[in-house]
Image (cartoon, rainbow, N blue to C red; front, top):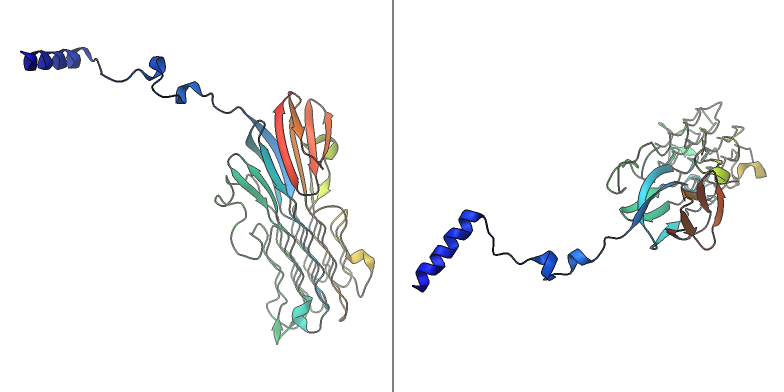
Length: 324
């Protein structure tokens, strides 16, 4: 009768919807339901890549660093890395013409629970665009470098909102963990004869020659005592003004005004042969959380205001958020 009993038991089980599954929640056959999920918090952060260098020998302005401002999840009590992009180094003085092409700024990155956000460095300004050495176009980047002057055609400004040195969009996911909510920066200006174009900025395009001013910056508004204005483009040679307030100006020879100061600003272009282009300035990172959470970031600066704790970093380091 055993077969009949087994068959009858199965039939009754099907009829009543009884399943012979292991009771995981009560008997503890697995432990996954007993491990609480990690506790997290959504933070607001902003960052800029390093500004690009201005071109030498009829040089265009270097671009401001690319800009990112987003909300992102972090797991509490986990350390996340921040890398600050350096400012673009001055190019070698032309001639030869190829030496005068401005160097781009470095990328600023923030590792989060969802992946790594990147603010791309600004493109370098174009150098002397001689027909035999077509280095006049500005470099693409978070914002684009201004075009260098000279005979080569077309000597156009570099594209903004790009992965530095490429035609790939800077906003896209991947490689960003999510599609960014705003563009990182704008195009550089074009040349006019021997006048280089202005470098693009995080907030606006560079001006075309002969009035070759640098593109505008971005002023942060969500980070209390660490709000500031960053990411302006450098001016094109020989007298273009750098974007306000700290980008480099276009100059004739070796004036110190060609070098950017502050954070994420582009250097100015230089007109005459034998002088290096203006240097860009390094990027910056800021973050905020409600005061119910604390921020630990050795080497960074912290502050409290208006119901938030704030962090500013201008060098590489780590960030940990914990419950207060």
